[in-house]
Length: 435
Picture: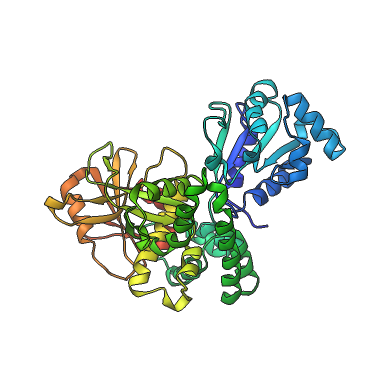
């Protein structure tokens, strides 16, 4: 098991005097269970794990009525006493039981001394009028596929990781080419934990694709679990099957992927799939003043869960990460990285585009950072200029911080654009604070 950045957040949660039961949200196969087990191993004497997806375990906790009732069943089922101070209670796939979910508020109110973490890959898909998360009684953390720094840690490139974390604008950046080569490997295989573990063992691209194939099959098999009604299933299947082919591109609901399906049905399917964190829809923005004015009726940009899955579904090999495909795949990885970095409900990632009657300028991504708007242009080639970004700056004047993400070195360019190499994207806030 390799180290994940969320472990530091979990330790803060443990030490907090106002701690509440914690729900870790994330798509299937991003490593939630492994993270919790590793956290328990490093910080507690005992782990009490309850997996409600297991039918036998579910029956043991069916129709549980109180915290005391739950703890009694827990001790009987595991044949050991639960001691709150040095034990972690881990409830996996909590969405399988509305009774256990409803108990979270009572754990918060009656037993704040208990360290409780819950996970649920399909949690959002299950929420309806009869199944609710106890608002104000729980905390949330979000887990995504490995980012580049986690990838370097997992592949035992820790020295390079440390050096990247120390890079400053004034540095010579002698490790730039080495970092770029490692990033190219990362872009191809992606950040799914099982895939990274496989690649770290033997650097075998064929095995990587085999693991990706198995992972993708699990998402296809899960589709029926997302559906709230049988008629919705075919639309969800189409999103999961075709979505990766449109990653990094704009799309419309109507006739998505030449399906012939109507906008209403596809819109519902996209929103359900987004809730279970398999994709993100990036909405257009047409203004350069705060607050950002999102245009929800315009085409959206699709960011899939993981770049490795996108490559697998497009049948791409490492040497094919160039040309037109490189353009869309680098937008995918930038979007994926920004979403995982600024995780949470308060972060809204958009893309900037002028109204049609004003021209056709478009900037790949934008978001609010403090009292400014960050405009990001992604360039898969070296030395490319950002005409649309310059247009956005001209319209927005001092409200816009222009950023180019590319294979170029870290620098302030002559046109005042902050140039950040792909491998330093996770540190974007460090450099934005210098503007």
